[in-house]
Image (tube, rainbow, N blue to C red; front, side, top):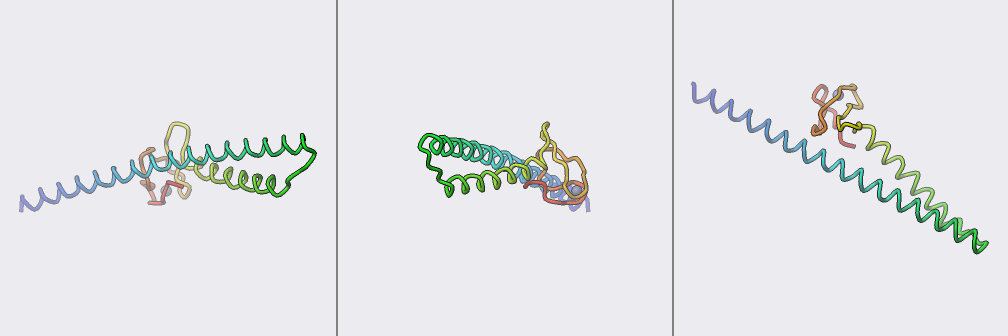
Length: 118
Ligand SMILES: [Zn+2]
């Protein structure tokens, strides 16, 4: 009886530790996604500036290139917004479903279970 209770206690300690590890991994992955999206957005802005500059210098406008860069930038800006929505400045996450503020290392809302990582 006592043994069973001890095993049950240990099991819940292990479950909690496993969940914490999963949450931390998910969170750092979210930060990496955000840094990558930001880098790709900066690259796209730079390429757009170069394409515009060359068009002005040469008097030739490559609208295909400019339009595809603009489309890429629009996509990346949306991606950034989606990633920012769940991660606040101090690293805490607001649940998009119920609004509950969760610690930064949580992958799922502690109130309703919604996935917090974008
Ligand atoms: Zn929630």
